[in-house]
Amino acid sequence: MNSEYKKGITPMHLVISGVTAGVCIVLALFAIILVPVPGLPSASGFWIPAGFYFVFTLWFGIWGALGGHIATFIAMGYFSGYTLHIWLDGGLGDFIAPLVTLIIFRALKADPELKTKKDWITWIVSVPISSLVCGLWVHSVNLAFGIITPPFWWIGVVTYFLGDSAAIFIVGTPLLKTLSKYVKASPVYVEGIFS
Amino acid sequence: MNYTLLFIIGFFVQTMVMISLDFANSKMDKNHRYYQLLQAFRVIIAASLIWLMISFFAQIYMGWISFPE
Image (cartoon, rainbow over the protein chains, first blue to last red):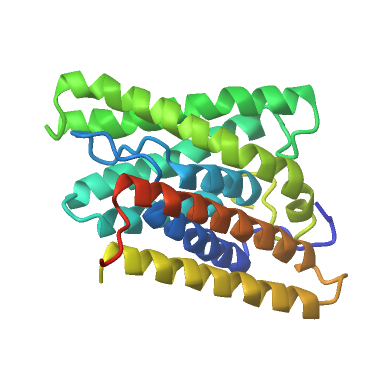
């Protein structure tokens, strides 16, 4: 990142959250390819927006994750029939998941440009871990609230694990590889979690 | 508003955003600190539009999108 830029949280980071939410909400509303798994609230087979908000989170830290969370929350509201706590549960899961990847990237000092073998391994390992954490969170909460029955719990977790990971790898990998160098040259690139 | 109409409106809104970004980017100085970020967002929105096109046809197949006879 260009060192001449002012460090710290700036209003532009909030703008970035808004922009990422704007991009993700259209996808969260319309870019669902497979029918959601019957009997499983908030589980789509191939969750394309995840590919985008994971990338935004690796570039813009918590502000990118926040944008993804806002988009998911609003989009799930559109598909009515879901109660408020299902929105919150799914939206929070989609907030936690990219943050897990971000924390792993920062802890291992991996680069989102995916230049070295270490960067690639971090990306390939952290995405399934994040998707699993998200799936476990969302469906354990659903189970605790009696929204799903125990036999559907593991189906939901596996659906999240596979569907989110596939979408993130297919969409996220080319975006990270090709665009990270441009974003890193901008003042809003986040080197840590918040700034 | 039905889903098909909402989808088409969403697609057009995002297309307009992309055209606006393209216009803003073309008017911007190449040394401007947000020049490269704007370029990155143009590509992101283009990728998003491609996914919307793929999902449009997939959703016709799935029966989510339909047109009056």
